[in-house]
Image (cartoon, rainbow, N blue to C red):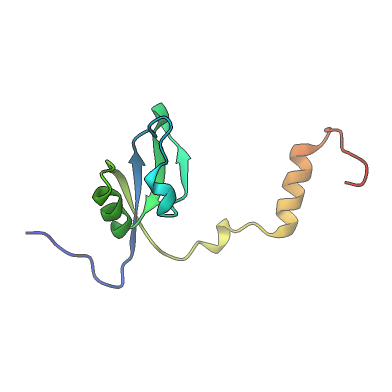
Length: 101
């Protein structure tokens, strides 16, 4: 018997899509999915169950890797503007800069 998640719990799936075929538009482009390159030419995406169904309807293999609950970001993980600037300065210290930067 399959259990359904309560309506108030939203889930996104980390998924892997097969490599793009040479010279062919990738159907996930039309769906507006952000993707990053994965191993062996595959792509990683974060999708909803509806996104997975739309990809499958287009004949794209979808390999679900992990489920993630949608929840507010922990405020401790949010970097302040000042901290981001300090980190950038630290990481770029010693690099030549163009005048005016």
